[in-house]
Amino acid sequence: MSLPTSPPLEGLSAIVTGAGRGLGRAEALELARLGAAVVVNDYGQPGRDGSGAASAAPAEEVAAEIRAAGGRAVAHLGDVADFETARGLVDLAVAEFGMLDVLVNNAGILRDRMVFSMSEDEWDSVIRVHLKGHFNTTHFAAAHWRARAKAGETGVYGRIVNTSSEAFLAGSAGQPNYAAAKGGIVGLTTSTALALAKYGVTANAICPRARTRMTEDVFAGFGHPTAEDELDPLSPEHVAPLVGYLASPAAAGVNGQLLVVHGGMVAVVDRPRVAAKFDTAKDVFTYEELDGLLTPHYAGRPAGETFAAAEVLGLKKG
Image (spheres, rainbow, N blue to C red):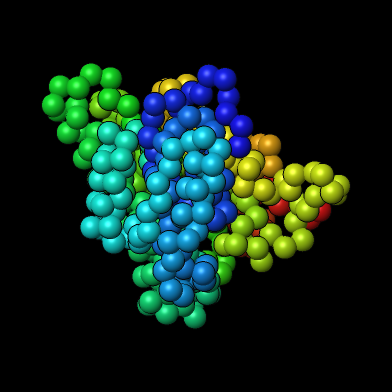
């Protein structure tokens, strides 16, 4: 981990959740490389479904790696879906580094099942970790920044980077819980962006595509390197620089945005647009009128086509 000559995040502090492995680890390392002091959070459970005993080892190993490279980092063991644990995480950043400047929400689990087979617990657990976990840390970070602004501090600096998914954009048949949580995170992000802009805080969301423990089966057979020294096009290292940018002063004008990122590509996703509009010829629509307008509009479309732009996914086997 080499440091740039003039680190853009020098003097800032950051929290990265789920940073013991995969994407979170790459993001924590990148923020540290750019000069930030980092609180490395992870619950450390071995199963990607959130199973197994919690362990401090993953977070501690990443924090140690940052310190060995000359950076500043502390580890935090905890489940961010627990409200009080999230409070303690933000308090730790403030206690260790004086204040919190950057929050990167990445922690998550998978419990995949078709909607007709999914149990209540499989639904609740994924919504809890992804969506409630994002809310919990955002709540306490936002309260920290607002309190500083209310106390008269000028130039409050705050950056939130949330993790959504292309599963939200185009659906994912075996992940109704995950897709719903990721869609909720986009709504949380845009709401937060509007609420906190006046305090000098931005909130953005990314849809990363990366080969990690969470996605090893999803991306099996896709985009593997063709040469021994070639970086995997689905490596988390392709995602981390965007997180570093969004956390930086350079991104002050980027707020409430959703960006897809992978393999050397960043796509800015526009807000949903109206594709067609129909007005009733009378005061109120009738069934017959809607049938005459909407049925021809959807005729000939591929079965199962969703509202999302298919080209966003663009998965190609390599």
